[in-house]
Image 1 (cartoon, helix red, strand yellow):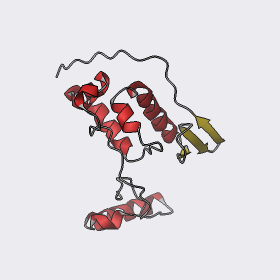
Image 2: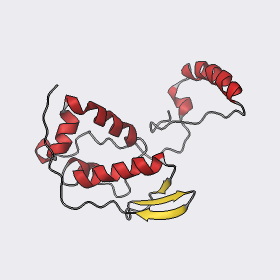
Image 3: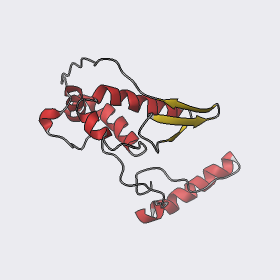
Image 4: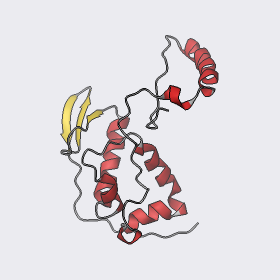
Length: 159
């Protein structure tokens, strides 16, 4: 991984057999290298940390608090944490809103980001609105993640 926590391409091969052979050799080689060699120089600041408090505990959205602190929510926390390295926040207030009044809307935005990424779209996040300018095999389109109302979360700790 590079300095921002994103995976780094280190090479290509033409055949599956050659790829497997080379992968084993490369893994041995790269495992012994210092972290600085994974950096590409294209990192844009530190990755977001959705769960590091930027507001007082009393201001936490109850669902955010449950996911952040509940043992039973550790799978969700780990999944969201993996996304932090790739998610860009053009207006600079995503984490604060995710932790407080905008939790539901921002959770939906993260879901859309993960889904669109998984099906192969890339994003231009140079502007704060709309949320995503998506580019892919079918062309470009804009997405604004919108929710209506709020979700009632029942937080219980059974583990």
